[in-house]
Image (cartoon, rainbow, N blue to C red; front, side, top):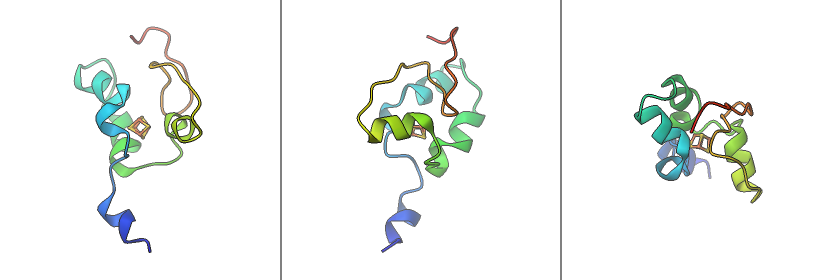
Length: 71
Ligand code: SF4
């Protein structure tokens, strides 16, 4: 049942998530992907909104804060 969990540590949205691109381009600290994306942390606000089909801006951080100067 929970086999999926061990095979699936990275968030399923990672490849298309703007947070990944912001980190790769040096605009965001790597801690965001380490603390959320790479461990499939479902506390991520982006993840929760994505799952419930609610739109959210690209500059919404995993902790729910909108970073105004991020684009
Ligand atoms: S920011 Fe959230 S939704 Fe995006 S890849 Fe990371 S954990 Fe997933």
